[in-house]
Image (cartoon, rainbow, N blue to C red; front, side, top):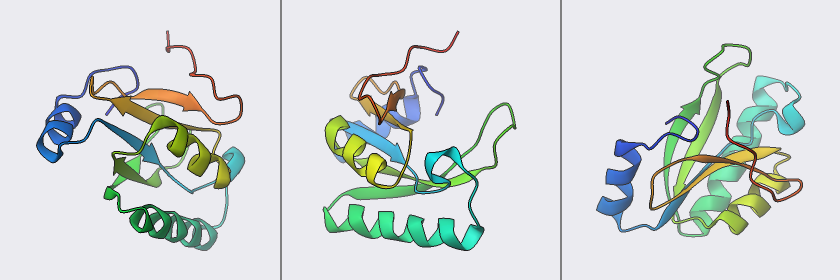
Length: 122
C-alpha cells in the first residue's frame, strides 16, 4: 500500500472480510527514535496481543520507507479498527502517525498527537 493511493488489494480485502475500514499500526521505534530490536519486538507483541484481545482480524506486514532513509518495521493491518481507536492505540505505543483507510481503500497518514490528518504528499 502507498499513502494516498487507492489499493485494489485493500479494497478487495475489506469487501471480502466485510469490514468498513482498516488501520496499519506498529509499535516499533516510538517517537521516531530507533530502539533495540528486542525492545521493538516486545512492544510489537504487546500491540498484537491488544488488537487480538479486541477481537480484530489482523494481518502482519512490513512498513518500508520508499526512500530507504528509515529501517523497515513490523506492522499489523487491523481490519475494522476505527480511526479514533487506532489513534488512541498508536499514541499509547508512542507512534507519531499511522495509516488508516475507510472503504475507499485509500490509506491516509493520520497524526496521533494533534489528531489532524497530515496533508497529502506532494
